[in-house]
Length: 297
Image (cartoon, rainbow, N blue to C red; front, side, top):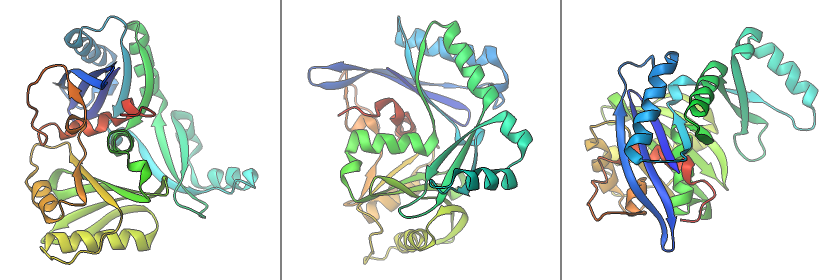
């Protein structure tokens, strides 16, 4: 399985194979894009895939692909499963018909006993471009995902997070702008973004339960202020970053090492060679998690 994740101007990739002792990583690397308009250029995308296949030396490649979440549109809606006509009416009132012609829409329940759903819109032209490239290379696309949602699959596969009552995925971003995903009882509870400035947390946008999000923000505020007494907002916190500077992540992890875990497949999986991997440099590979969905690692 070739796991690929796009983050900004880079494609990260790794290949894993099954063995008697478990999954083994045979190769990994990254390819830098010439420009961020990659998905408007079919030939450039083809060259990216060809480079990866050539480096891994795959005869019959099977891809799992995670695209940068900035290619997608996120929103929220209300869905009553007992009244589909009400949802159709609501969608007609809140969504642009022209946009629906350009996007595929997916809906996920936000939290228990709530009618609120997270809506993810995926550009149809992007899906078509990916499909055409895969077919040209005589390859197979196993699944398609995005950013932090693919990383959440990794938390379940590599660290068995699904056995916990609750856990948080925390993606440290550029200019201290982060994404966070809260899972409770194996269901999506909240998805939101914060900015960390002057040891204070500010919300940028949010989908989900206000009280839970506020509790998490308070916990992060206390981490940044180096407070010893911390009210843990969930059972475990899995952290990663797709940027080069990870000083903030290192500092915050040390504040609560018992509960904050680096979300990195290289800390769990074996490699075909014994070369030591820097677990901070390879944190972007967290977003290859979708390639491990449903596999007992």
